[in-house]
Amino acid sequence: MGPFSRGKIWSYLWDLGAEVAEIEDASAPDLLILGRERFSDKSVRRLLQRREGKRLRICSQEMLLAWSMTGVDPNERPQTVETFIEGHPALELVKETLEDKWPGTGPIPARGGGDAEFDGPEKSPLARLGYSVGKTGADQSRRRDALEKTFAAEKQDFPGTYPPGYLGKWGAAKTGSRLQQIAQHIASNCRTSRRKDDDFNTAIRHWESDLQWLKESFYHPLSYGFRWPEMQ
Image (cartoon, rainbow, N blue to C red; front, top):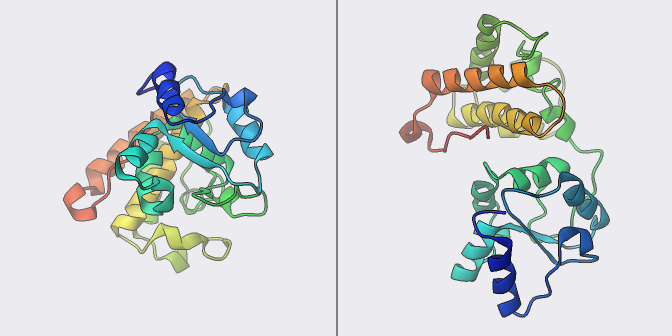
């Protein structure tokens, strides 16, 4: 599971008086605790589907530890939650499954009809400005030209139409918010593709190379104040 073994987590929860079960055996849980490894994508998605419209707090082991130490559930603080989600495969799977709508302390949101489809590689501003990867994608020069254009373009100059409010998270041109969104978009696509059975090796190599180039070309932590995303 990581960073703690299942036995240690279960013992801790038993000491708190909690009822504990494997995800496949939990009929109506109030809390879902996910480790970084050995989780079942299908089981997580099935549980989220069963709990649509019902409350289910979702935590990593690290979130649970922070909760127990501070008395404050990180789910009550959206910005704090994002720091736990980034780079955590299971939490990223949850966020992806729920179409970027983290439930926090509320009910599991219903899926469909949101704007998450525009986060996909085909419909994002990046793609519409010419960025594509893989065996049939753009060459390195064109990809990086598209990255520069996306970083520098004003939002009103992004081609195509988008759902109301969608472009807000892309930030203003040449800002840390814009750079962070581009980097997170690429890193998220890379991490998601690693979990799939299809052959995404070429696309992953392109994403890794482009993300490194983007970091070397534009990023400085003291200037932009966010942690560069991981691709694993």
